[in-house]
Image: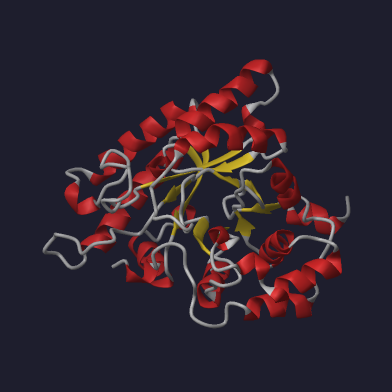
Length: 330
């Protein structure tokens, strides 16, 4: 294996924890298909996660809200019992503190909640973490993320600074969980520059600053300013929906197809290679074993500077998102 391939397979977080470049995403459901959004379908995880393990994935990205942690835990437990896997071979990410879901999503306040509706925010975080670890059957996760910086609706508190204060309370609880060994690293998801600045001002401890910011990034949805800010702060950026969740016909874009043909790769492989060469980690998800293998086969080629610029240019206009815009969160 050459140096390029070796260096691309993992990144080191600012606290010294090594994180794989690619992790298998464990959210299942119909996000942007032809049908109306139906919410999460965790039953799809049984087959997909099994295939991912067979395909060699050892990093898995989940969340309390997805409803798949019990399934992931059961499948990992089977491999532990057979001796096929050990805990230290895995990198498990979870996310807590997802705001209340809209009514058409089939999850309740037991998995999602708004901070202004919770009596004790820190205790809610700790209780959710216990439930997550119980479902996973693990003593710790490798990475714990704050799922969103706040609720999607206007908060009911009379204090205009409440969302900021709630984020700080949640983050202090995360720092406590990390101190106790429940998480090897902690980070955030869907945070803007403003959210990150506020959090680091409110909790200036450099030992407790976020290690990761997981946000929606794909060739049609980019935020160069956010990425530059994260780089300056030593925060690794992880791209969720790296293929735009199959939306917008992105993988059929002629620019990606031309680059893929030039390298003898698929457009999906080109997109993932673009992510890792840009210094990001990514969360590809598929239900097909062939695609799982393809998605991991991105370390034997390199995109030229011109090719990188061509892909960057695809997202030069207004971002096309498959999830809510975090800048609308107070």
